[in-house]
Image 1 (cartoon, rainbow, N blue to C red):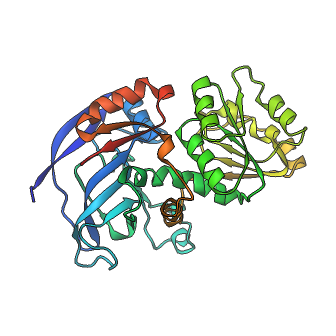
Image 2: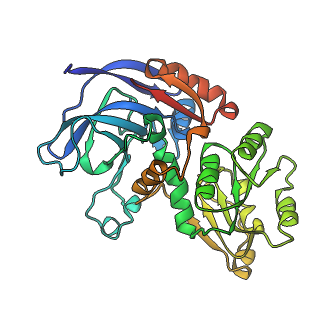
Image 3: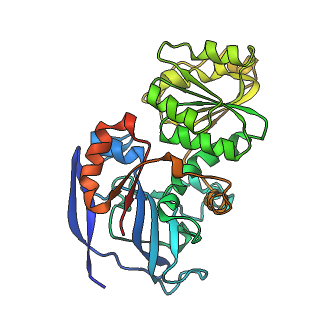
Length: 349
């Protein structure tokens, strides 16, 4: 096996270069993967556009990417059994310490020492190979194409949000935002048995896609009328659940006015402001439950199982496919075509 590999290295704002890097060694508790497929995350695009995202800054070259499927080419001597060379696996990119109180109680996404692939300066999956903890990979059945396996990671964000607020069949859901995560949350809500789903956005093409994917109602909030429209649809009650995927403080602030009394709000998108006014009196009076969503935990096996039995279909969310050799052009394309792209997948084979 060659000792060098190709990797897409981000040096700073809009400076992504295909470079030759040493192929990583496989340590005792790890598996060495040949990357087969990658999904392009909004965070990858944001790092490319701005060179930073929240507290993470690209202050030295690193490899982006964290939505990935790989094929096992080597297994470390102390890696737990159950996988073999040649197996395809989905990478769960948040690697916790496995010893803190949060890890021991199963909420490992809250681990303060978590190492997350592609969060600078940690290298990610836009490379030919990656060596990673055996605990961070999940077997991908042959029934599931690699490009769909690469979407397990963003689908897990949606599933974690739905699980956290206890969505049940027959309930009503409003999803704020019809970007990739919003649309995947729509598909996930349908898979959970929710038949009444409202999507709110400002862009006609995204709302059209949401309708195509099965949204019951699509609301254009470009005139700031979303609250009035939803209350009209629900005869003044609002919906049982509201999930904000926008990363917009203005949209997120609408949620308490949209949710019904005793309902729940999940905040998935990371707002552009660290704080903004929220109607506390309404939250108390309506006894609203509000939960924050920090990535996910304990949902990758659930998503893989749903895909295997056909309970969930993510193929309709893929808008573009590219080769890994085109990765530098892909980031530039995605950066300037956000409204016309949903999920971009990158084929390494």
